[in-house]
Image (cartoon, rainbow, N blue to C red; front, side, top):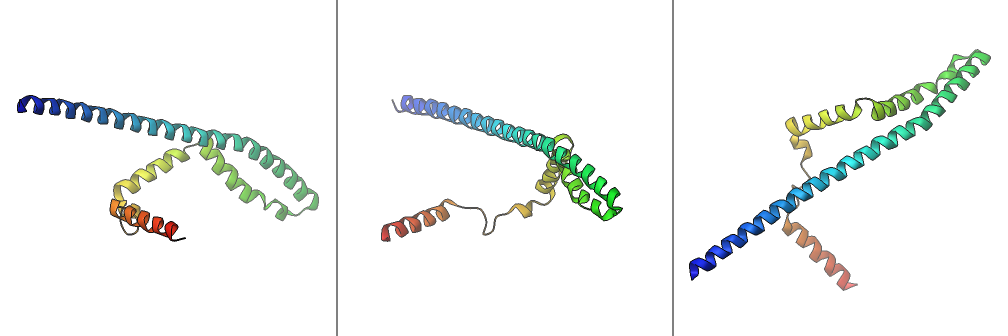
Length: 143
């Protein structure tokens, strides 16, 4: 009799473990899909911003160049320099290799400089969270 109950419990435990494994796989797939969509939205936003900023940059370049020629003062062109940095950064983000370079640097940090990722006072533990929860609940009860 005990063997039958034990076998049933083992089968039940295996079923629960399989269900938990499937749940975890689904969560990981969902998180990855959400991350991919957020990244796609960021790239799309950058490309859209680049259209507007590119128009502004082009107009500013024409106006400033015209002003510099009319006034015979090349200093009028100075605002083009910082605008150029912003324009080319946005272009690199939307159409260039900036994201690949960022990903490569992030992988390098994870592989060789993981100590930079440590949290102050170490990772949070269940006991830390319970202390905070209790102190906050006492704070709200006392008021």
